[in-house]
Image 1: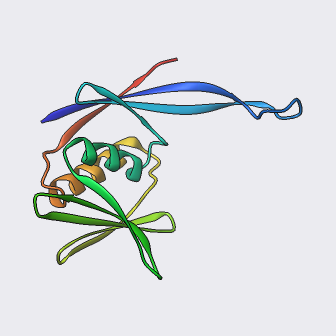
Image 2: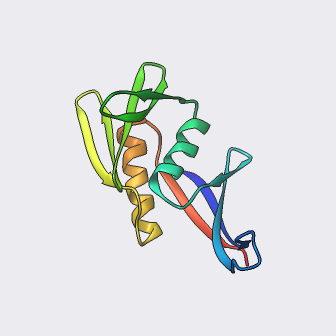
Image 3: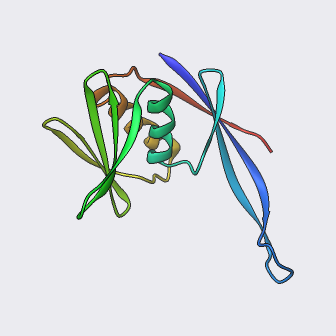
Length: 134
């Protein structure tokens, strides 16, 4: 089982003007294949994109009248990821699964990610470790 560390840090962000307050923002950096990948946020879409692309999948986007979505391809395997409000629909051939994009608990997020990685992308499960850097 592959192990991936996700470092959680804190950054102070200034709004850019004198009247705007400074606020705290969580940042996440994932160590994957000897490289660091900054995640937009700790959500399913950001996590899956970084892992799948690092494992050789090519990403392209499809723009349709009704939907705009991402398609990941590798060696004949093609997976579409269609956003729907705060949900994501994963499609591969006849397989189709709708899952939430955001989770309150990281353990739940990682469980869903592992299920999708094995079922749709033919990758092995990952042991995710979150480290706090303050």
